[in-house]
Image (tube, rainbow, N blue to C red; front, top):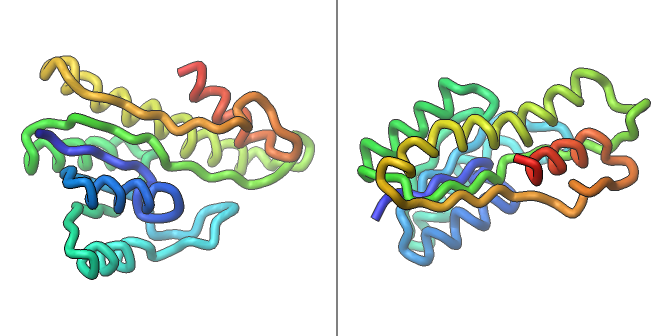
Length: 167
């Protein structure tokens, strides 16, 4: 059996997904970034997750990588293939969700939310799909949100999650 990759797998919902998959015996490669992101208080999450896994007697490969950077995504995919021989699953979970209406949202925040939430999902799918197609198996779970249908005070986040539904 091949690896399951979890983006944003070092904190929040992604951390719970990583731990649950490891508890169920899957070979997990989880990745995230150490820097604090807009709308989050999480930072430096890799070492605490590794400590938690060890305390539970579980294993998972935890990497620092950025879903917005194609070279980082490729590095994670290549690592998973080299270590496990196949990729059987991808959970696109990485997301940021700062609040703000259209007039309140800066262009910088808009670009960052779209890059993490939508471009990151695209880059991971683009990199993993050729391998899954070749091996004739695999599943991709793109984490959406009810906000993808529109939610007050969440312009960028809602747009990015709506884009994931369309993708």
